[in-house]
Length: 359
Image 1 (cartoon, rainbow, N blue to C red):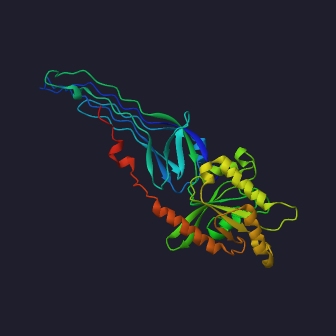
Image 2: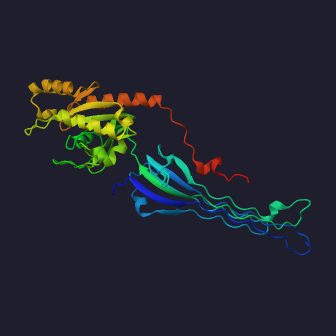
């Protein structure tokens, strides 16, 4: 399935049905009185966060989504039926904003979360509503209210606890394969990863976290160079960033410290909040460095990079050091989760909040 993280849609809730003017006509009931019913409300448009989806590709080719209008009121005290609601399934992490103003309207952050993105119009009143002691034969009625119509932009930011960032061929895909159930494409050339990959890391019984592998970043990514800039948004919701650095020896004089600093600068240019997120250093491919040279190489890199946070020495290929890394990551993630209080999820399809207001 093609990965699509942006789409535009037009949604229209149903219009309310019109009220009815009718009078009771039965044998021996000369003055039966008014019996015109109200119109039914129009259908709502809901959006639900479906954990089984990871792309917005369905909305790239299906733009219009219209709910059913409410039925008109009828005689014999019959009210019109409500229009049928429609529910749009979207990936968890979808941001719904106004396509014209850019204002963020909704965010789907929890699996199963349901929101009302367009409310159906209320039904009009029939003449039965206007009956009174001084107006026994009312002929008034009201039309149905129009449903909401919106032009929306859908933007997907994947929900992951940990994000992997680094230069192309730093070993990010190999790392996510070694520690999780993800199976991204791996090859010995740059930009093998063309879209984000998510993997669930199992630490123990009922202990896990989600890690995201993004296309490699290069200098100038925040201005559009390479592929990584297209997916930097997916790091904005992570709780922790793992900066993966390729420590394998080079023969062409590439400065790994300069590359690592370039990655950090791109984060700062793209989003200051992303730059300030907790970031750990993961020095990868140390299996290719002679054991007697590793300690000096690592110390020299950390000193020149001027890094103050946690540093992990691993080999994703042989899984050396991966176990201690994932245990430290889980400890950090679980500590943050305890601080965050999750609000109760209320389904508006079954809540009083979506009932039509009295006019």
